Amino acid sequence: VACNTATAQALPLVRDQADVPVVGVVRPGAVAAAAATRSGHVGVVATTGTVASGAYPAAIGEANPAMIVSQQACPTLVPLVEAGKVDGPETEREVRGYLEPMLAEDPEIDTLLLGCTHYPLLRPTIERVVGRGVAVVDSAFTTGIAVEDLLDALHARTDFSGPARHRVATTGDVAAFTSVAERVFGDRLPDVESVSVEAPLSLKA
Image (cartoon, rainbow, N blue to C red; front, side, top):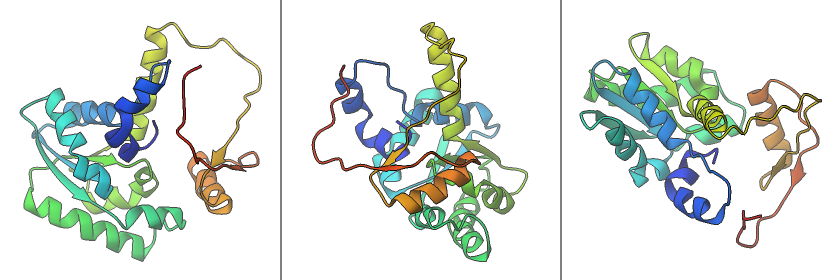
């Protein structure tokens, strides 16, 4: 489930509906952040929905109950990314507006967890704002590692060696999605399909 808000709000439901293992992005990021911190103080930046869910403090606490977690909702960052504004003065101003007060309130924060899969596109700006003394943990990257580990544990890695085939669909604006997705993947995408989700989705075979 490649969305922090969806993971925080709906992962148990998705797992109940699926007959395959389902990996969310919250736990891998939380475990990595708890392992990375030296001070025991972790900052989390995420959407308003993810922050309100309390999913990250709970998951980081499960990894290490001694952790002190500060959260900051960043409602303007996703719209900036989706508008293609991943750098520049406006973006840096917004990032500073969220991060500097959190770091001032707890100067012992030495690890910042990016609790939204849009935020890695802002990583250069975020790292510039927090400085070299704060490690930045990407929940999307750590989830990829968790999926690899799960496939290995299940002996489920494919031995397919032919050319990859990709199918990409979005419920949003195709042009806007394509622009952002090609920036993320660093390559052109196949034609993106527009889909509408109007009924409950069943993931069972």
